Image 1 (cartoon, rainbow, N blue to C red):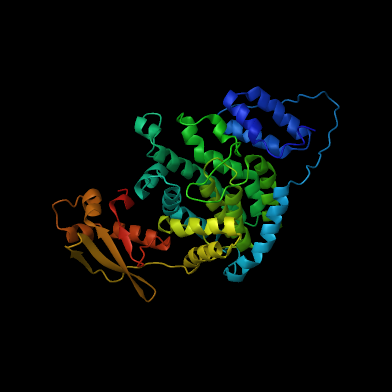
Image 2: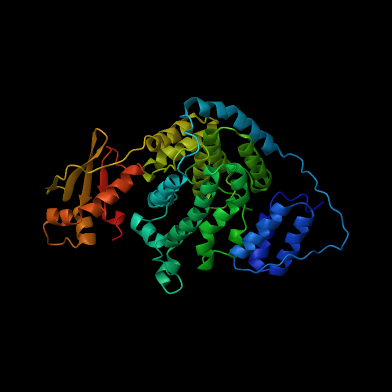
Length: 425
């Protein structure tokens, strides 16, 4: 009865991880498997393995025992979530562009996901308040992160967050590959979302900044959102809310609804003590992939309207502002913007200390700028003619401009500005 009453393994895992109880984990994993909860058994094994423990399953029961799985009664939050989903899905369908359908070239889709990583990580981490730069994100991605020998990397919360994001992104990308091959996005997310969360924070656990129990899973404390009037459900309700959440995702036939309501409702439940925003954006992009929509970046300069729209949905129960916000971001990526540089004409603007040049997107000209500091810091331009330095490194600079433009990382006026922190050369 006790084992049947557990909706997930988070509370058990917190005790197992903090105590280093690998043998007990093996007993519990086998017991859950024998009582029909293989999902919880696998969760325990993955979490303990992720924390560095070797766990062997061993049955605590006498031979011959027969078990059957008991159903848990539905909690009030489950009915509320079902009602909200049903009342909101039509509003999403009314404004969201039609799904393109699964891609015909899966490798091209995955290349795009890989190429957009640096922009996605920079903006997603910045939205959560981390002081990261595209250059730091790229350094971590390329392996220029050594917490074992570099005390600075060990103590740097921003570098640890960037490393965690890189690790989690690899798992999410693996799921995207399965989704565009036709597998169920909701079933995949249900099975591995806790793994994404653990990867986000594993570097901080390894560095000793947080306890291993932080990797257990769902929260066991109340949470309050800074700057918001919305208070997420009490932690006890999360155990019932999350299975119901994934049930709703699995039953939903429309990818756009899965993406928008999946993102919002995940944040509404707020299942983890930290990292919910990053997790919700990962989930949104997995669900977008199931309809062939491209990976979509939420920009740091859109943080205020983004969070305001989420708040409005959670407090006023009005999903329309959040839906239209996501539609604008998805639409940019659907339009397949690209940038070419067919007219090699540039000028140095003395009063602003910038080199100005132009790219072309179809029939439209796009204003592109690189700062003097970027030329000095990354291309040894100090004391040299800035136009000569620009021309000597034009191809690399144009690659960075194009990367930002394709990801929709433009300034308010649609121009592209390359700062020193954008570069990693």
